[in-house]
Length: 426
Image 1: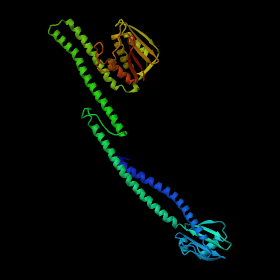
Image 2: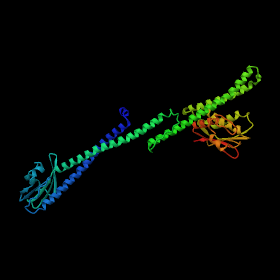
Image 3: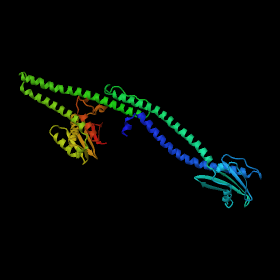
Image 4: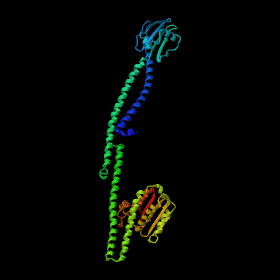
């Protein structure tokens, strides 16, 4: 098997085709030979019957014409009247006329078979009286000739099938291998072309399907690369602002230009920077959140109540809940991040009320804020997408990616009035 793998694909195909064809042909030849032999035996009997009818219809004392594969003997009054000139040739010297007389003088019926030295002989006879009868006979010569001809035809056909089949397979395999090599070259150029050049492949077979799948992968990689580049640019820009503020105030305080009390601004900007770093690390950790062995059954109601308790003295917005005992199979830390981000977003936009409901694993966060524009709904979970209040960040992107890891579907819709974020199992 290892040696076979080292061969070219076209060589493997031709080799396998030849082996299968030869084996199948031998089985076919054996089976057909048996069928044809039985047919030839019947044909031999039929031609013997025809010759027998010709012999017995001859006028009395007339000698029938000799036949290449058949012979005859005529007895009258218990004595040989005459016999065909090829008597011994047809019977291969296995019988004498007296032996035939002894065999058939007491045998009833119309036909008989006898085997001598592995050869089968066929007899037809007509009894005119107890001592007068005609015997017509044949051997295996007719079968040998026809079988030899048949075997030669089959052998030639077998060779022709192998040759034509290999030529056809060779041409087809070359075309197929060339297409595979072309696809291999296209894939090899992906990184060189930075995933910018589309992969094209004509046809409508499995290779074309493979090319389409690779092209789909290329587009996804290109999109991810673009998103990554855009996100890195946004992150660097997002970090520059608090860093610049911290630096400027620190220098001003050091130079005595600014009041030391303004260090609170530095602390606030540091907190902002710290929050952005946390979000970035959270997004990066999602790439490693793939081991189900770390997942556990978590009761959602407990997490929601914990998050609401943390917000108790931070807002005047009323938060109502209707929660059943539904559970998710996930990690507690990541679900806390998801629910916290959604609640933070709701607090940012809500006017007076937020309502969180959980029923049959369907978790809904409602706020009575202004509806989200249809255009922004489509881009809501994209990193650093600008919202209706000019907000940027990674929060909703983290929520969406985390839900995907736990086979949860996250959706958002406008209601009248307000907005709902819905989480439910796929």
